[in-house]
Image (tube, rainbow, N blue to C red; front, side, top):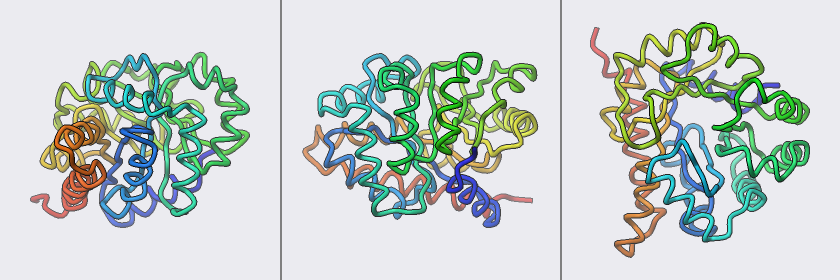
Length: 276
């Protein structure tokens, strides 16, 4: 059930004694060509895992930066099928970096669970995060993904109590994504003091690595979270770089990868700089 690439990457990170850096970008933002260039550059810039958003018109968990990125992706014509094609092109040049799709259920429903799982696996996708699919309604999707060895990665939040965590952990594989703040992406900041005990609770309930996102924008904050979590997820600040590049007439790829390097370097160095 658990995808080999995800497990292998977290095992390698554990052996290195550090957290991983997960970079989120939106498919088709600002164009298919630009987003493919960004994807291809992420691993060398410092991304240990990649989350690839698929554009959707009503991304309810997202703040303004990712909402705007989704609009740009839709205007570029990136459908869910187009996102899978993009993933396939990325995978043709990278056999190792775990690639996670992140988005909403409606496009997957329209695609069809079995067809989506089959095509996602064929495109080299390792996992799927569906923000608006509760565990109680996920069995048909889980069945389809399991058949093609694509991990379903669920979200845990600050309001998830122990009973809820048991439900969240059921049929989850790869890792658990811990939403560090109540609210949407890119608005509040994660706090390591509150995140640390929550990460331990989620690890205990799931037996899986825990990646923390929804509130990490700076290298300093990324380093703080990297000291208590298995991975740090950054998204809004990266799609902000795309918007800034468009406004300035600069290369979106160069701006995004420069920001990824600064964040990735901070995550890599975080535990090495801990004081005893």
